[in-house]
Image 1 (cartoon, rainbow, N blue to C red):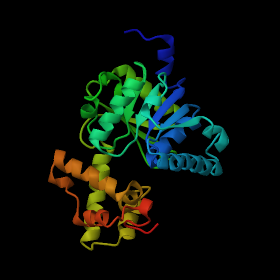
Image 2 (image 1 turned 30 degrees about the vertical axis):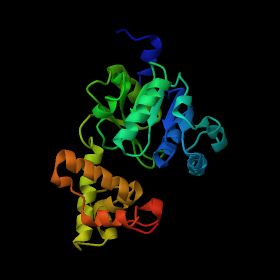
Image 3 (image 1 turned 180 degrees about the vertical axis):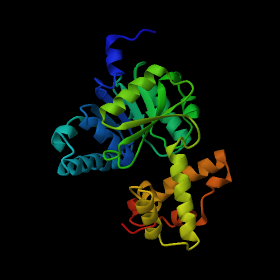
Image 4 (image 1 turned 120 degrees about the vertical axis):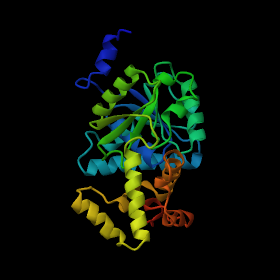
Length: 297
């Protein structure tokens, strides 16, 4: 199928711009960060939060994130100008039909994500690209909930989204080439780097990152070294910007446990979560978001 001139422009990384209209479903840490980067790049962003108690918190997360970026000189406009391009919605069905991209960023529960994506598909136009920010769930299986899985893929952003330079683009067998090219161009318009992978359990980043994190937790559990020593070994010895235990605190111990359990079920016992991780999650020690994990925050 021949592309129109507009489509050719949208897939040329040299001239690509961010999508004009973006929907983000979920206003948690990741959703707020995704909304930040698209709005800062000039897009009009609608953030969907169905729980009224979470709407104010989501708006505050975006505002605070923009303020921090401005303080570091990383924002071209004022926080208020960027925030003026962000609208809060209470229902997925309120998403604009002409949205070019909708990113789902709800908790890592396959059934929830599938329902959210199917509802977003009905609310938007046929040209809207649908994406999941999942860090490990099968894009192929999530796409099975859609009438047109060809316009669906994974856009795996990393926390903190504004500072992270990577977006992992995950392709299912059904993902259309044009959709892939549009998303690659949009990622580059955000001044981020794309890594394109095919759909497989844990993709590339979660599979490697979780394996390293689990082994670090086992070392701590076995008394090999303290948390700060393990992290320093990777930071100074292997030039990792952040050690695996501090990284787990930032991601959330509950999130890392859920991914590990999923990978254990799909890839085998080498991803079995250590008991220390299970115990900390059971005690509510989830990392930075609760104030304590492997470190105190």
